[in-house]
Image (cartoon, rainbow, N blue to C red; front, side):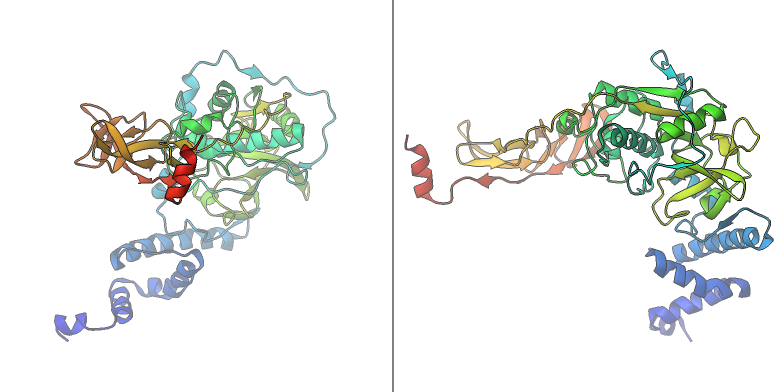
Length: 443
């Protein structure tokens, strides 16, 4: 068959030919499993070449998972989860984000946990106490630190106030920039510090997660639904004190999350092998024992399809002062005794003119001006935005220079740091008829 005839074949047959020419017999035997996995996880690939590359990664990961489970000498099992088509270095680049190097920042205001005089229960699961929100998914953004921090604040807020409120990781990712760096990493203590300085944090419902770093919505900073009073560090490598802390509330910890076995963990008590090079943040939500083996209960931020519905049991009392995966090395928790502030009043619409307005916390931009008088308005979905002279776009206040040709917003003249311009929207009109307008003029 010539090339022209080959191109006229159905695309599915082309795929079969492509795969059969390039796959080994062993690979071809796994192709049905791969197709089933694609369907189960809703995967889409841009080309057959990309699909082949993902299959090669899948094949290698399958061999790793199968070898571990077949050995039969481990306390935990692995599975081909949603990360099974990633090379290990791709996984590490996308799903971690704890920046321990940021500990070089000032530490004078940190309090050390000295222990508790309360009796320590033999087991505790803060999920059963209603102090843990649903498992979340950080996506391909290295802000695990934000999820660990919000989880700890959600927990202590429930314990103190009786109310479980899901808090905004996106606000931390976008706005906490003193030491933390959004999707490029951060540390829980500095998230706690930011919330204290901002006098609170917004809810996830009001400031939802976008799986990427965005411009800080400064108008949301005043939406403080939960506050904390301080934060406390558990002394490093002291598992007894860490246990006492978890008996009081959920605790943020750093771990090594880059091990391949951790990537594909499915169930059981995870024992490693594992490095103590901390690069991931999780939340300890309890502890317990099974058949005489002690474990921690960890909430991860990789979605509910990872591990045991988003959780992992990790060996406790391993005999290593650092703990499995370094879990005893970097632990902290927020403190709270004060009540939360009353709900902020719902902001009203932004008035543009006598008859037109924009939604609350947005900016009115003039679209048509005659002799200095604006006759037509449009809306920008940002507070205190810069209205571009092309009458079509606007820019955030921290990217105030409009590049109307490129439809970009720049940090400054000569500064190439930019983001896409934001398209304006139509205003709302208060009056539907001329009669309504005349009545508005009638005193």
